[in-house]
Every structure is written in C-alpha cells, then in structure tokens.
Length: 252
Length: 284
Image (cartoon, rainbow over the protein chains, first blue to last red):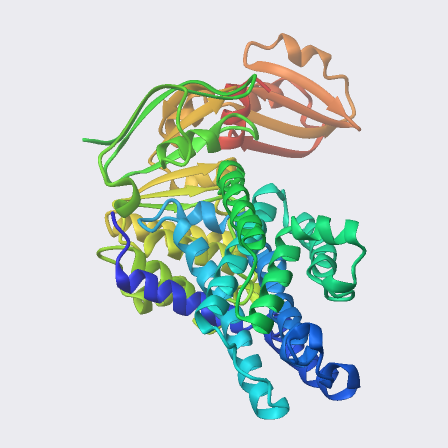
C-alpha cells in the first residue's frame, strides 16, 4: 500500500517531537555554531579585518560563517542522523515497522528531512544574526550559494548514511561518526584555512567531501562562484557514498 | 477453516538449519501455541509466517493481508526512549486502514498515555508491544515470547489480556517456552524440536499422553530397592534421603502396600503437568 499524506504527517510530527526532546541535538547543530559565530566574531579582531584575498571582505563575512555552516551540517550528517538510524535499527524499530503497512524507509526519509531542516535553520539564523550583529552581507549570489549548500549537504548526508550502513550498533556509529567528524572539520579549514594549508594537504583536502564543501562555500561567499572541481568532488562522493550505503544498509 | 497453513517450511542461516521441516495449520479464532526449547526454530517459524523472513523451502498461506491484518509482537522490540505510550499508539494507528480507537486499547492494557517508553517497566513494555500489535485491528496476532522476563503478576495480567483478545475474534499465534502459559491459554499447540514438529495436540491431550504419570516423593527408614520390581512403578530414585517414585495411577497404593506405613514420612504425590509432558516429548 502506498504511504498516505496523513501517515507522513503523523510520522513527521512524532519524529520532530522526539528530535526536540533531545536538547543536545539542537545545541550542537544550531546553538553551538551560532554561538561560536557570535563569540569568535566579537572577540578575535582578525575576523573583522578586510582581506584583499577575499576581495575586500572580512573573514567574518566568509570563512567564519562557512565553517559554522559546515559545523552544523556535519553534526547533523555524521552524528545525529546516523545515530538515530542505527539506534532505531538496534532497537528493532525499523524491523517492527516493516510488519506494518508503512515502510521503515519513511522514517529514514523523515529523519533526513528533519536534519536537513535543522542545518537550513542554522544557516538562515547565521545569515540573519550576522547581518544584524556584524553587518555581514547576505550571499552576493544567492542561487550559487544555495547550490553549493545543497550539493554539500547531499555529499555530507550520503557519507552519514554510509556510516549508518557500516555500523553494527549505536556505539560503533558514534565512535565512527566522531572519527570522521574531526578530520572532516580539519579538511574543511576549521582550524587552518585552506589558503594557509601546505599545498600537499590542500590537494588532499580538495578531494575530501568536507574539504571541497569548505572551499566551495568560502569561495561562493567571497566571489559569488565556486570551482567545478569542488562541485564535482562533492557530487562524486554523494553518489558513491549513497550507492554503497544503499547496498549495505540493513533494516534489522 | 484454516487461517494460517504452513507446509514443509525450511529456513537456514548459512550452514545452520533453523527450521528443517515444519507444517501446521491454525484455525480462525483459536489461540495456537508454538512451543519448544530455545533454539528449536519457533521464532524463525513465526517470523516466516509474519513475512519478516523468506523461507528457503515449503509454503506458507495466510488468509489475511500480511501488513494490514496481521499484528506482530516481536521479541526484543523497543521504542525510542522519549516516545510516549499515547504517541506510539497514535502513530501506529495512523499506519492502518481501520485502526482500533487508541483510548479503547489504552484502557484494555492499562497504560498511562503520557508515560515515556524509557520509564515503562518490563511488563508495561510488553503490554505496549501487544497494544501496538493490536492497534491495526488485525485478524491475526503473532506474539513472540510475550511473557518472558515478566514477574508472575504481570504474566497473569498479560494472559488475561490475550484471552480477551481472542474473545474479540482475533486468531492468536503464540510462541512460548512456558508450559504454564500453554496450559492456560492455548487451544492447540505444535511442539517443535530441532526444526521439526514433534506433535500437534491440545494441552490436555499432551498431558494425557504421558499416561497420567504420577510422581510420589517420601522419606523412609527402610530399603526401597524392592519397589522397582512392582508393575505400577516406572522409576525409583533416591536423592539426599528423599525417595522419588514415578509410575501409573496406582503407584501410590502400590508403595504404601509394599512398605510398612510407620517407615514412610513426608509423603507427597503430584500428577504430571504440561512440563512433564513437554520433557517427555522432547526426550529430556
């Protein structure tokens, strides 16, 4: 039987309630990136200095919001989403659902939408508070910005689903998530901006999903465009990770 | 009329044969038990019936829509910790075309709709699991080890609940290894051992097959070796001064006739139970 709109609505409402009952999720995916954005922006003077390499923009207009958006996306993609899915599998919730008229793939879809919505909310809040508090200009090329954000999310969430597919239980997925999370933030340029990375490292970073995402989003904020290399790398990771995830994902 | 028919079911996991050759049929409206020791193939059998596993051989026919009309309670199935009872039932009710009113089920299982899953006791979780199996108003309920881990009180309440479900016309396929549960609930049982059906009978039929075995225990000061030769006696064992004699209906009279009554104390007799019948059948 096909899934009906009321079923999806009910499932979305229940999963949203459960999501909101875990304050840690909201904190790490929304509160932390925006808090860091506001605090770092206000306390580190270098973020406020116009940089000719950024076309006269300040790091607080480009690098800082880009990294905080990536922090939010990776938190959702590598930690929150896979942990929920693996926990649901571990508890037999997905298997239980497969005996009802509604397929467990619906839960996966609803969880994906919830986590994407969280990162979009974090991004929107960042743009608005940045504008209000630090006079950060809104993205000069909104469509290109949205495009980079979209493909970055696709590749990140595909990798997150792959983590869920490869993890036997919730402890494994949490450990694996963290093991991927921190190097990914590093490649994205969280601690050493891409321009300051040694060339070898930069070349490696360009071929990781988060490295390409970081480079593309900084660039689209600074110049309104992005390199096809980075778009291609994200798309390739998205496709490959999604295919492998589908191949290995188990419902029970 | 049979509502579930299983013929020559076979299922293996890798090299391990879980179900070798299982056939049985369940009539509409009955509580049908699948009993056997751990690892006998009970769960695999009902999971094949529920459509959760695909058989490697044999046929299964279920006279109902598997998703819409078969409610399933799985072993070790949990809900998210922060999901409340009422939300779980509302959610699962929304999955089905003709759900039972949630309030009715809540009253039936006696759960607080506001209680979070994490706060529920083992018995309450089982009752929620049963309620979720029933919320779609099924023709058939498949319940796997529903009272395992429950205290005696919770177990009795669960049995009452199952009886009421049957009274509403639901056919119940019940997996268990508790013989008391079988005796209390089941109309018929299939005894499964090593992936095959040993026998199908009513619980009373199974008990009477042991020939109304009697078990007599007592203490005595005189030798009891001679009892073995009595025709009424099947076996004699002595453990820590306690004599255990099994035999037919007349075994008690044979013992008191054979031994001087001043030499016998603490005399007790027990008739065979479902446990004995089960042990006799599975050869232990």
